[in-house]
Length: 403
Image (cartoon, rainbow, N blue to C red):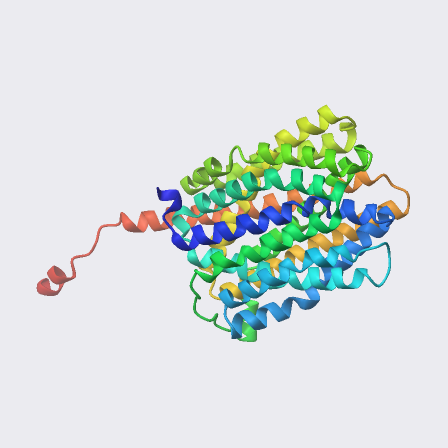
């Protein structure tokens, strides 16, 4: 099957599925877990903002390892560091020194994992089937993640040690497929002048995604409080949303490869903006929550596949891919940290946490504007190349003889 013809992508997807299974058991619960440990709402957001900011402070470490040890080597190291997030969460007990390991390990794990991961995925894939590759990955991870919230909610309700030990084990097992993938050549290092010429598309679009994703993550905390702080019921709701999200990823990825990237992004982000508004003002009952999750998840298949297809293709086409990824991820940090700070300030002054969702709308608008410009440029380039191919070829031999 064409979908599964790339061995490196297949192994990368197996790794990602295992890691994502563990992450889904905990990620949706992170803000809720911190809140449950006795932190006020504003402190939850401020602490998480600090956690995200450590990504920015430690990001040069990731770049150093990628350029000196290799992208593949750094990805394996990052995968191991990612697994340590779960034991670190066990230490959290209110506001205190025990938060420091969680903050530092989370920030370092993110930069050591996501910078090489996105770069490696971009390098071993091809632009011709990028949408399908991204769609397949999202479908696999989504299907796997259906079980994650269910199990995570059950385990957290029973025993937090089991709840965080199992994701740790899955993250370690997920390193095995990476050992069967190959290293790519060491990235070239640009001069200071060349760095200034690196395309800023990734940085700008990921500022939007940072706002969009991180501000949107407060919805899970809102649902958690709506369910009377029940981990178990929360897990069922999150799992149901994951089922919805699995419906369209592969299909929409294929449509992007056929040149519909701009339209898919507009549809995806447009629907999500509408749903965010409904969540903020009308979602106060479980049926409405489930309905919102259904439509939001379908739209997510559009927006995420459109976003990452553009980013991966831009990464592979960049003169210095690892630096493009570095600045792209830096943009995400900017959006994510600012969103948590803004929401923290809002809740500190007594503004309903639901109004924090407005920052997700801001992020969606930034992202869709950047993506539309990207796909327009890509369409113009493809049209130009097509016109060049159809120009009559000069017969140099005949011209030489005639002269």
